[in-house]
Length: 258
Image (tube, rainbow, N blue to C red; front, side):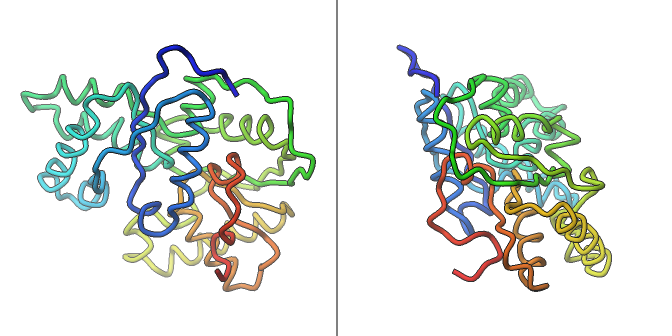
């Protein structure tokens, strides 16, 4: 890891609802990674980013949530989220929500400081490869979430970090750029389509024969991990990339019995 600078950047961790409510270990792993990289980490009071409201046409409700987030993170150097979906909402869609607002410049300043976790570690902090690579290297496959891949351009960053931190071997997933079927409220509105999509994605993951499936969005991993577990694929471990990089593995893999 990099040495701490005299004036370390202050990073505000946007935890996300899914991490806070369903997998807090991801948040603790993020803090461990960021502090080890020389950052001062703070976790301001926060709520939902407003993405669910925004995607369902409730623009005013989304703006109310967005204003609270922008105010809470006003004094940090960077805002980092362990989710491409939430990070894209903060970075790309907040400016759209406030494009005709008197405070649009403030919103633009906020959005410019937002990064997804692997994007921040690889592109902004530019973490170099570490010498003490893990000896028990895992054969991993990486699930690219739609928002991270398409809206933030995240692809090489998590793979580079997995190799640098943990000496991982990478297996490609066929049709890896295809959605897993979660899609927020999509999986509830279109259950049959979502089930077919996750079944196809799971089949491609199993065909790649990884020991471990990683991803940057917990919601996708819950969708995939739950399906894989229900289908009896208990040998395949599913984890958030932050847990893997930080070696925070006390909790059972996603989808497994606790």
